[in-house]
Amino acid sequence: MENKLKIALTFSGGGYRAATFHLGALSYLHTIKVGESTLLEHVVALSTISGGTITGLRYMLGQTRGESVDEIFNDLYKFFTQIDLATIAMDNLSNYGEKQCASLIRTMSDVYNTELFKGAVLGDLMDKIDEIHIGHFAANATDFTNGLAFRFQATENTGTKPGTTSGHGIVGNNKIRIPREVARHIRLSEILACSSCFPSGFEPLVFPKDFVLGDSEEVKSYISKIEPFGIMDGGVVDNQGIEPIILAEERMARCTGSTDGKCLDLVIISDVASPYMNAYTPSNFCLPKSIGNLTLKKLSGRLWIAGIVATGVVAASYIFTSASFLSGFLTALWVLLAGVLIAYAILKKKLIRIAKTTVIQDSVPSVLNLRFKDIATLVVNRLSSVLLLVSSVFMKHLRRMGYRSVYQDDTWYNRTMMNGVYELRPGESWISKLKYGQLPEYLKPGDAIQQNSQKAASMGTTLWFTQQEKETGMPDALIAAGQYTICWNLLEYIEDIKKDPTNTNERHQLIIACEEQLRKDWAEFQQNPLCKLNDWKK
Image (cartoon, rainbow, N blue to C red; front, side, top):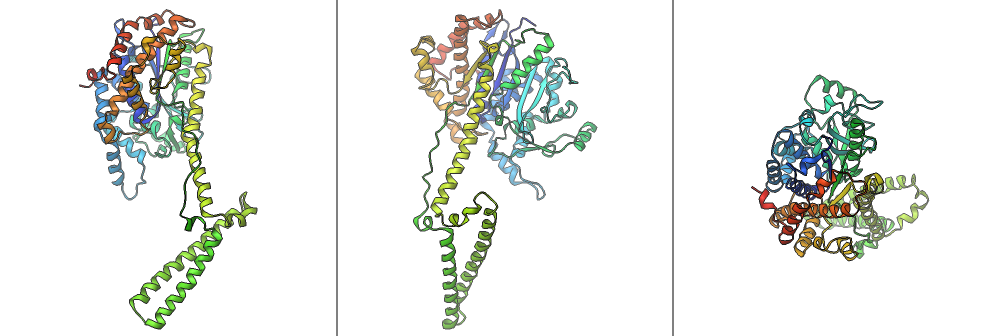
């Protein structure tokens, strides 16, 4: 067992874009023979985030049930392409009872349970983890009490360390932990929901309120002692899932007594996030002149003038026309205008009172003289910059930090490989690698691969495919991209370690021995990027 090649996989977040791209990578690893087994069977650790958890968790369940990779692939493919997840979720949401609080992510969890996991729980993985090739699995989320990574783990017992009572990977983090006897009752659908409920799209799941845990004595006792806490998308703190792999290696080293701590031969980071982002641009939002040039002070005056005029008109209608439909209609309009005036006066007074307690307390008179178009610009620019900060700047920074943790650590040199959905698009770094002789000519991606990669990378972060995306072949484009991109990256990795074998060992020769198979497949991908899909779609 010690001579076995040991590979770790991470599946990044990114909705269905991630789930299908990673399915492509996973399926391709299963086609590459290493002796009597496949590269996939040499994967001993798996870490998943958000959309990546869909594929990773379903694969783990399939392995514990004795399903073939073909069966798992086809079940996932059917789920991605035939299940109208959005419609089912919305239908279920609209049928909530009177006393139930609406929760889109809880509804999604119920759909996952019915359509994908068939009632399976974390205990199903825990009980079989010693019988499958992956001994360390982590589906990652974020706790919204401490802002820390929150891991749902099923792992081998690697022995205890000082201060711990279990050799298994914890469920939770150093602040909040769910005991194994309680965690084993958590449905896999709830784990997926926690891992994939990205901010703005969904709300947090609240443990234990939003979970179906049964009524065992262990569960009841634990629930009675804890404060409820929210759990959200794992991408908030680590969208590539790198840290759990580092921790898994530490546990493996402790178990084996490794002196150098290098228990993993290769970590493949499968990632659909891009290092690029759209630059911030000031808003061009414009209000109509008649509204845009108004100020709060001018608006007050005009509303009062309108009220006085309306009062006069209503009074005149009663004097000159007596009781009529017109006078009744005008009275109704007057009442409406009076209500608007009263509401505006109350709201304005409250806003001024609040403003006087803030940093603008000395500037309230100036604020009242701001034009509405200026206020609109200030608000829109702040909203757009905050959205850009949350959706791109923070995520790019976290991504760089995650990669830095392995690429700037010499102990990981030649033991990591990235597999990115965008890598083989036109204009990417492969061009400069070719130019400076860092990439052999045969690895230049052809036009068909470049265009398919462009298409695959263009999909947004959503937890379903639209009908249009299905009709234009987006699921197939993404799966194919996962297959040929990991083939390309493995070939590049082999080229690198043949030139510089620093930090490699005899087990890396097993990867090098795959070169002939990989070259043959790459030549086929160059002719048709989707060439392997028909072998899987049955």
